[in-house]
Image (cartoon, helix red, strand yellow):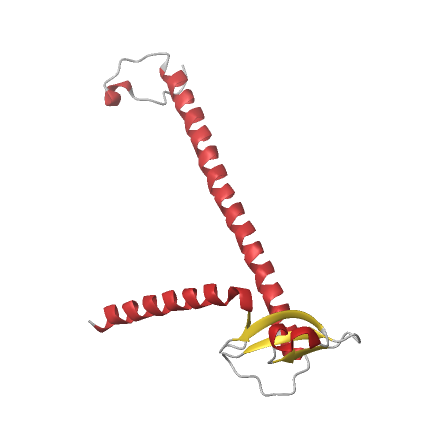
Length: 153
């Protein structure tokens, strides 16, 4: 006679030889659920890692662009909020100008690369993204304002 795992008096069940089989099935089902739960959590973590890797890639690309623009030749003091236009000379030298290709007209002397606005934090926003950046900034200002209003009451 072996050791009884389930006390039939405490469970109000008659002693049955199927008790061990049921217990084994419950353990097996629990193991299956534990495995599925762990797998789902690991999948969620893997997706977060991929998203973070993509964000890191974007941060590095943005930093490279910002650095390139700050290192471009420029004969003026750069001011946040102003739009600058990047050109490339035949020698390969890149420089910033306040004149857009439209202002140059047909007499534009060098290859136009792109237009950028210098931000207060010294980052650069491509001209085609300015509207989106401004909308995002307005939304953040509203959130900050409403958050500050909540803390002041």
